[in-house]
Image (cartoon, rainbow, N blue to C red):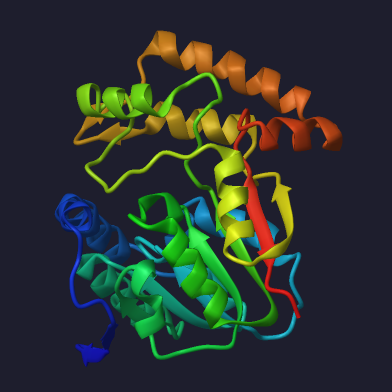
Length: 290
């Protein structure tokens, strides 16, 4: 591991997919540099992202005292800054150098200490840290070329009894085959909301299987923080390279889908069934045995 410009670099090389993603993310990092310059407070900056809302709900399941947290795939860094603002010792992992620099700038501007680490989760054994109380994958495990290696390394970095969250991960509906999903990603990237990242497709039961095979227990599926209205607002405003991802007809169909699902899954046992069957979005939690 080397330290360059206050960034801990622990990955010596990147796959072609990650290299492509790093290039694709640069315009988003540049755009957020401008957003950061216009934010006078941390609160203003955090309002630009849904990550703090999601983490607020998840962090309530953990002890209140200060924890050592590893936040993986932080992107623009709002989640890491939010965790730091709660008094936790935060290590943020991100493969994009541009996003790492953005997070450093935000950390300095708002006085929120975050240890910024550049690399991929498959190389976490080279991080040079251990005994984390909790590890978050910030909508990032599905970007890993080898999610099993990422989870096994995470398991090794957790203290006994420590927890792991997979937050806001991409999931496929059970009636969609992976072959069809990847083909549509190739032929209709804008419609799929694909910004050029290193995308991989998984069903909900695959995430749970990966956690179990990595040695974790006490696995749970948890509701996401976003309401149907939040999801629809996000869908309506989503643009890739300036192009709106969803048209009016598709938005209407999704509106009906999310509203029906939100009502259907209000009962815990129905949510558990739908989440495990990959019918609704959810978060995943598991624990390293004591």
